[in-house]
Length: 290
Image (cartoon, rainbow, N blue to C red; front, side):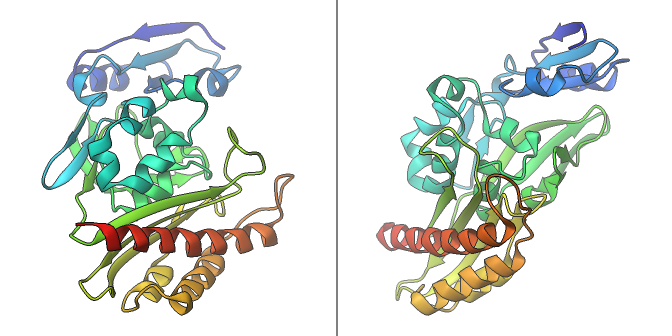
């Protein structure tokens, strides 16, 4: 890795200045769990590391009546310990809990997982299922991007030179709503997903699904929102027939690769199974929401 210059701004404005004004490649240190690995041998000129963990809003989370405002650098260990957040977004917390070991959880963050832009990033389908919005600050001010549009390819996101993800806004779900996230891995823990699925549903007083969002991961270059799978659930009581239709839609939408961890055919099948199971879990949770 090239010689590193380390900067630790204490405000978003200063962080943007550090990123925008850097004459050398600049990387944000949100959690840092992948930064050294990704940077090793990649840069010939000095690498500027901008540590944003000294910015209060970047490492905190506020749950309001309207939304969860999540700091992109809040460690997963702190997020998963928040019972108030878990009660509203159990699927998102499940996804965050799957990132790495106990030691990694103390540094890794949802924002880092999102910006890392891995097709197998666990929190990305969970964020998409919950209609999260990414608030990005840059030299020209702030802009907001739906999370499903944030990742643009393998290891790529929509941010340009000088821009910084400053918050993830997740709207508080309507009454009778809940979510779930599931993934399949070859090992029992500490592995990346062969396939993943995030589902959020809203049920009315009769148990009928009135709204749904379904997202799948590790089966395409980016995590995908699957409207056809959601449409299969809406209007139903999330019964076997609608779950099977949602699974089939997810399988059809996937575009996986074959590698040593699984064939494309296998991944297409597994992602359908995961959508079916995650939707059933989300519906069961929604039925118990007061």
